[in-house]
Length: 239
Length: 239
Image (cartoon, rainbow over all chains, first blue to last red; front, top):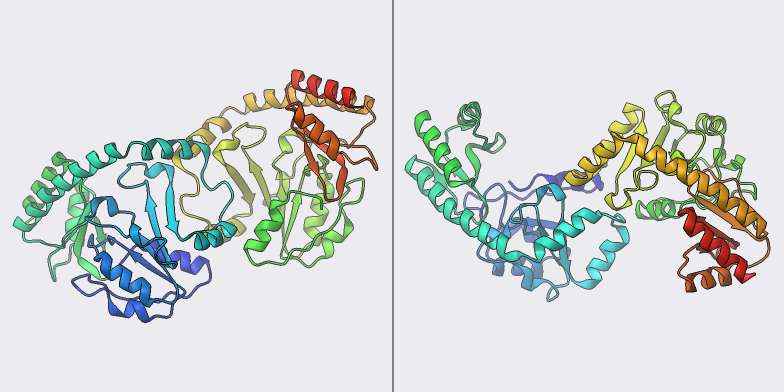
């Protein structure tokens, strides 16, 4: 924690018991994640809302240390420098999740992918919904995956704009964690950012504020160059 | 039983224990369905694969007799003379299911609807998938429901063709249960229909044969007038 909040909901839906392991301020892999005894361990990598990434060697060491299954949620990995796909098959307890909702810009189609050892996937198949993807999503997904170059071009543009955004936020006094995603987490240690988020919203600029534990931070999605310029201007005017 | 086979799979996926109540040969509501003590009772009405329908008064009596929830799966109800929607809200333990996969011809979009007392629906909402319908399915579903007249025209045509199919099958010696669906169950008591189904398949005419318990029956979907004529010709040639 903090991480993608839906994991906790899904654990509750299944009647499971969630064990929450906090990140330190540097968002490195917490040692305690390897010793929970959990049957299922979630690692969002790169992580949301921090935007940070754990080195794949550390992910591999975690998978080897666990008795249970390690789910590596790589929703944002196309914006990152490395991914854990090479662990799939080599380690029987690793599931890598991908989505077409982020880098492929197909959020409305709800397409996700799971990669794991065939034995593990066979178990998942016995309980998955039948027809969990509809025909239109299947066709759109096939078309998107047949054109990875378009995705890569979008990602390259977003990473360039991310650099501009990070530099601008730093000039305005924000500490920005190194981002491997299409958003950044910008902090002003000790200063509540809720009023800032509200003031931006009044200017039709929507950023995310997490009151619990990250009150001094804003999560800002990398928009177009014009949107980032507008955000930085608005933040400068709010100082 | 016999009924839609997915119920049993879903019960198993949830770790439940299935209690199977057999229909009699007339496919009337079995008295024993009211006294299983089940927390959840499924009634496919009209039923598949029989095509028969239970009178709504009997469905209401069943709902009142049950301590648990009664799910009335009305997947085929647009092809029937009556439906149980008036029970929703009046009886807090009734869920009526509909689908756009049959009468609305949108099987590829996987759109289902549940109607029930708000308190019961609130419970379902706590465990349902987030984003279980994607954007394209939502838009297609909205468009389909805004044009019920097209569905009704298709249904009227299918019901007319159904009459032709039933008459033709009767001439060929089949006992056909009164159908309230877009298919018919045609039986030749005591005569295995597996060879007939195979012979039809060799002519590219696909009908459904259920070896377990309904070996002397074929489930035949109502196609176009031309398809029904081709089927009847093929069956006549096989005699």
